[in-house]
Length: 418
Image 1 (cartoon, rainbow, N blue to C red):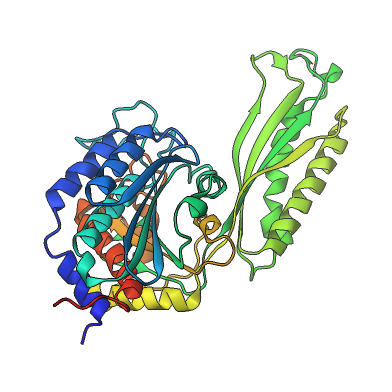
Image 2: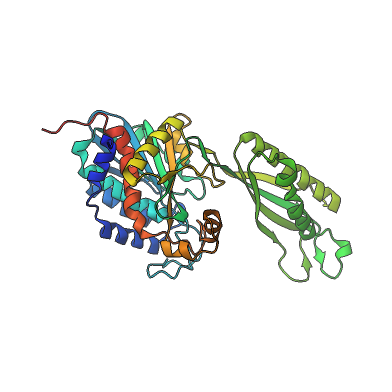
């Protein structure tokens, strides 16, 4: 027999305004905004929260939005969606493709906002079925790792009730209809590192009078590939990506410096520190071997924490999701190498559950090469791809996951109806 939370969630989402939510999604997708520039998106979300009866505030941490609905005694549940887009030129060919050149919702945050708006409205309309407090958050700048910390620093939990539990979800590639939970580590830490190599510039016809930092950078890029393959144990998970290499201005000018930008993905602090130490050592060694006139600069920049679900919280949410969405729809794929700033909202002590919703359209999935799930998974457009286009059939289930997750806590003290 379904739990009270599952029954109530199905009741509250039985008549969702799906066409309206799909139009809302298309509008958000057509008008993407980069991190900390989400003014239009924030205003659109705030308008819907206010209409649904939430006490709403904008401009938190720059462009963040929060809405609170106080509904008697009970726990405070935070539902979060990130709002920012990416500097990606869209190539989906969709009729509602981005109208902003070079900017695209390539990570599904427009869908996240749509799910949040739908869930907030459904829970507000059914407030006689639950008791407690809902805190709904539209977070800016997830892609740059600034948003969650910015909202906390701007007094999110002083201006609104401090939550007892946090819930969040993310669109992901995979055949529509699956919900990935992991009762523990689910996403990795991310660390950006910038390297500057100093050479001695000169004319391209006289390389013997120079110290070429571009050649040194090329050697460094190759040598850095050994950090994971030769310095990290096979049982550990780690990724080192060279995302950018820059040097020079003209064909015949040897520049005086070259720059490299790295990104690390790790699942423990110990591995992260070991990788950073290896990068510093290898960079210094290559610069010394090349005869660089100055020591290289290695700067550790933006970082995202590991995302580790509270096991009891996540199992509770996964159980109600399976009740609402069907047996066999909830899977544990284990941790992934992607990263999130969502854990900053937890302040190190608030339990949370974070999960994935698969969103690849059926025709795209079926047409992808491969004979098994993993081959197809690697072939379909993923987050950050210029071809990433979630299926709109996920609007309803994405609302239901948030509604049922919230009700897993809020129905315990629901007021009786007379």
